[in-house]
Image (cartoon, rainbow, N blue to C red):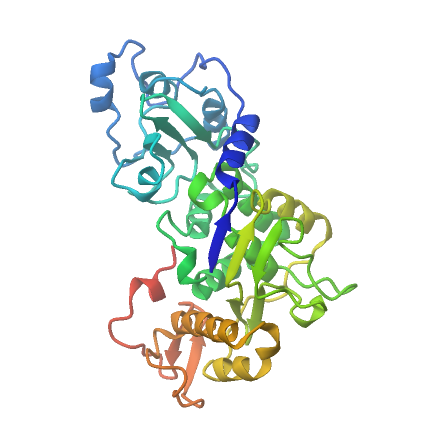
Length: 382
């Protein structure tokens, strides 16, 4: 999928600063006390991240993050928040992509480049605060999750700063996430996604991944037979074009076949900011019903590709677009099938004997074996 954003970055920066609350520094600090008098020269030595040996109070830490103001120095931030759990620097993708960003302090991580489950602070080339994420809004009440449960859920939602939409969506990630959220029930599932949106920095915040997940996690409304379009108000160009009768693909651009969710989107050009995850969460909270059962992919997955070619040619405007569409579907199916098959789906026997292992969230052969050398992409359940 290729996304072109017309004039989006300036708009996003304006919107972000329009919603960032800036306060005077808090009089209290994080429980990991930092002396008030620290020289700028020694600050860099003090902020080297280390493995966490304590758990922060999420609500209290959100208040501290909310007190971080633009243009504060590293020393000031250090005095308020304590040492970060991870620092992303110019060798890391999200810092490299912004010439005005020098580094990002991440809090609530479990390792380098892992998701900052409590929030983060961006510093510019002057070593002053550029952006703050995680200081707005309210975390979910402690009665809904333990801190460890919430950390695990937020980490699972993250696709990582190096995720490239051009490579296509990953159904395995969506299946695992939906099957983790569905047993939580509607209230807890939406609260977890909402907390992700509250603390998420740039790299996942403006992705449509979790909007797609909501379209899988919830049932199609019975009264009209389709979900509201994702792109209706902001799209200037989209391929393939959504069907006029939305009921033909009610979750567009998601298509669920044999309980395997597939992303149909090839190309999208935006006039402004992407759709709001927060608005989607609000809409699902008010009107939608959680799916009754987890996803359980079919025991006949090898038939999906050939059936798609036969059944969905009508969706594409040209033969060339259809070829691109089938290649995208093939790529996604091979991600799902990578533990049992790595060949060409054009020639695979349609009756190959496999089963879905719900405990491991992978396909296996009927005796439970998988292909040797199955990568972390197939086995990782972050």
